[in-house]
Length: 300
Length: 259
Image 1 (cartoon, rainbow over the protein chains, first blue to last red):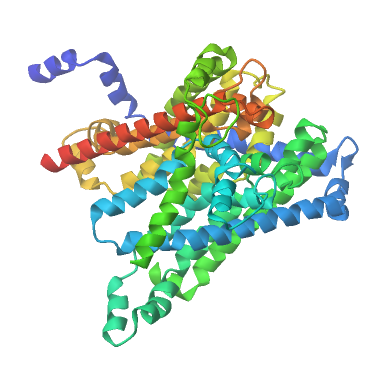
Image 2 (image 1 turned 180 degrees about the vertical axis):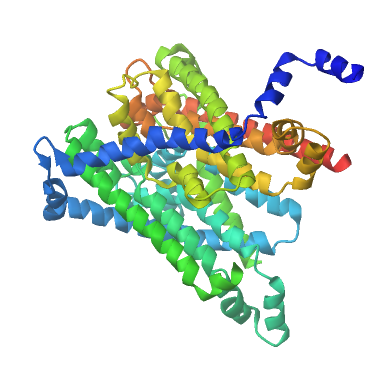
């Protein structure tokens, strides 16, 4: 008895009150409520408020802003270019990331594996603006890439790499590559290497074992990585705005333009709604594919 | 062997563009060309002497620290709820927590601008911190959830069996175990805020321009080599932060193994 009294007297007051606090039933639910309220109030309600602008104006409900988007070829062109760039970026990241992720699961030395991991992750955390700035220097007409190609003799006149679609794709591939590598790696890591060895043991050439065993098993990673990169690519703003120039308008640049320059909030909201709906559809698609894919089913 | 050569080239292509910036920041010319016409530190001096740059940098660090604190607390709470509590609609909750990472950032940007303007939160540091923390919470949430899933719950049960309250067990048992994840989560939140531009373009005004906003304006109008000096500082700073983080997490790992 004396013992416990001494103990509680020696404790700082805050601990006593904290212990008392935990006796209030249901307090643990604050863990759930506080963060969700933060996101819902700040982000969700703001987004609903924003989307209201696309279907309501001072005259009440209207579909004219959305109809306008689909009637004007300019907007459809922007949407088409956005989808095209996102698709091309997805394809190039997939092609480049696959060997990197494959070597990461194949390599035995732990030090080398960590080295590759670090090499992939450092650019991931270096400021996006710094990386975009670096590309503006490299891709210039008198930049290192053009100069090197000319010295080597591959080209005679500088090729335009900046302020066009090529520049946007190079810059965005650099930015989005780590997402693809990590998605591929997380799936490849779970593939049982003994299956490939078994195929080779039964006489398959390494190439055939890879094509018929490893590649199909890595499909889930290719799908999830591609969808992630595609979704992120659709909404990109900074890189295309700096490397693409005004002729390569992507949907996010058009939204920004409508808010900051022409102050057409209704149209900006309609464009944002279209972008949001495409993103949601892609997310549902990925969920659907992952549920119904035979290889994926066995893995989960 | 071919695979190794290909991957080696890819890694060089991934890192070299960033490293090019460092020698470039020491150029004596006022344009970017290789080879450098001469070496000079004048662009670093130009950065330090320019109030716009220095104040932007100070503001960015201030906002990033507060963002890291808020998002680490909220992200840890959410991760604890997601791994420790049983409730209906957990998947909805988890999707809500990662949503800001997947929703196109331009939408989040104009939505926040639209609702912050009538509340007089635009062009304030509070507005920036609120906006940045929304974008940083998912990163903290994902990092800590992964770490909490790997922890032996029996340790908490044992603490509670010995008379500790759930909150006491969390602070005395769980938190020390997930400390590396909490530290990485807050570091990621800090870097996210430091580099955030899309939402910041809308929320920040004349009085609250952060470093990325100054860089952005510089990149869009006149490219002056000061931006190379700033970039070089950011690159070295990020690598140092990561070195510290890797050092810290490997030390805690060693300590855990020894004990």
